[in-house]
Structure formats: C-alpha cells, structure tokens
Length: 203
Ligand SMILES: [Zn+2]
Figure (cartoon, rainbow, N blue to C red):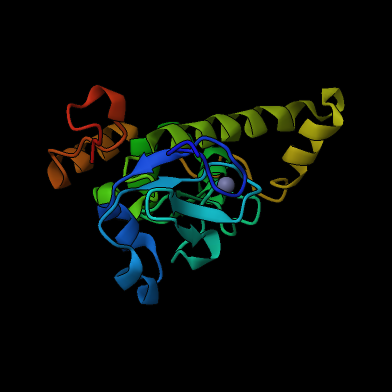
C-alpha cells in the first residue's frame, strides 16, 4: 500500500509530525502514538483521523480532542485551533462588522493572534488558508443577503443559515486594531503563508 494512502478510504493523506499528533489526540491515546510520523486523512466522509501505514496504527477522528474542521460530522467547525475561532464566528463577524482580514477578525474576537499552530492545529501548520476561505464565504453570504431573489437554491440556503445575524452593527477602527496588534504581538506572523516561510510553519 502507498505510504500516504488512507487504509480505509484510500485517499492521499497529508504528512503530520508525531509531535503534533501526540498533542491533538485524547489523553489515553498519547502513550500509543509511538515514534513514527503520521498522515492526516483528508476525506470528509472517512472515519480515520491519522494513520501510519508503516506501523499499521490508525487514530480515528472520534479519538481527537477537537473535531477535524473538514469532516462531515465536525461540530463546531473550528477555523483556528489556537484561539478556537469557528467558521460561525468568522461569518458572524463579517456580517456584523467592517472587518475583512484574518488578523483583524482574530484580534477583535480574542484579543490576541494564534501562535501555537504547531501544537494545536491538526495539520501542525497555520490555519490561514482555511480561515481565509471562511472569510470569502462570509463576504459571499453578506453580499448575497442583498440579492435574495436572484440566488439559486444552494446559495439561498447558505444565506438563510445566517439570516438572523444583524448587519453592520459594530464599526471597528482597524488602524487602532493594527496598533494594538503591534504593541501586544509585535513579532507575530500569524496569517502568513506557511509555504513562504522557511520552516514550512509560520506560527
Ligand atoms: Zn480515510
């Protein structure tokens, strides 16, 4: 079997260091993780979380402390595992405020930026791509609320899930927010692209 193919769904997994796996599994599993690195199963429907074909070990998604955001039973759908910001939080913030960037939304909601991705994110990397895709979804929902009559069924359903949220009820001064970030976390690179950083992991 391919080293990187999930033993159950056969899809290609993503390499994750043992270092990360050992921190995201439930307590009673820590001892059994062993010395090898694992692969993360990326199939939303598959019950597998991590696997190592070299040792034959499998960690099921139900054996993790926090749900994998992209699995079909994820509840809540977590975006940032450092600050525990969810997709729902992001979309709500986009609708309620003028904020549009990961750093601004994160700092506005939690008063800090994530900096423990290596330990807390199930991939071991910064969540920036996922976070940003949820921002795009939030902006789409906010825009589509204005043109309900023109939407197809799927988009209408997406909008309807967030319809109770009031629009633009809070204005946040982003210059002030930038200043606060600079003061509190001057060296934070949270939100950078992991592929652009030398270690492959930005935070
Ligand atoms: Zn799988």
